[in-house]
Image (cartoon, rainbow, N blue to C red):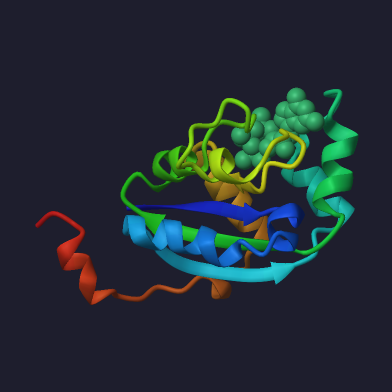
Length: 150
Ligand code: GTP
Ligand code: MG
């Protein structure tokens, strides 16, 4: 069981679909272990997106992610990184399948609703950027006996 970092971007918060997004991951059987509504500072945005520095869309991306509140989350579960990337859909909404978050809710790569870590290493890095240790909770869900194999 591992963790991942997911973030509803400013467009998703403004579109009022935080609840739907949380529901999708809950219904899949994943566990929410940390969450907060927050503003991303330019400094945090640059650290988070440093792999994209120098790309043509970089300045726009930093501007966008700092333009309004985001909803930052940590989710836990079996294969959580791969599963959440699948539920989110392809980076460009025009290629994202219906039934995925990006496939259902948006039109442009520059306003694609949600971020999800792309590997376990990225997840560890991004969780520590956005969350203090005491903001991540460990707790049992009794229903997991009906979700996890024995
Ligand atoms: P994240 O979960 O947000 O990291 O998306 P991703 O992993 O599917 O894509 P990637 O890390 O390659 O790009 C990060 C973000 O930069 C994307 O989600 C987009 O918001 C933005 N982005 C990526 N490619 C483009 C592009 O070609 N044009 C524009 N305008 N934005 C882009
Ligand atoms: Mg990415």
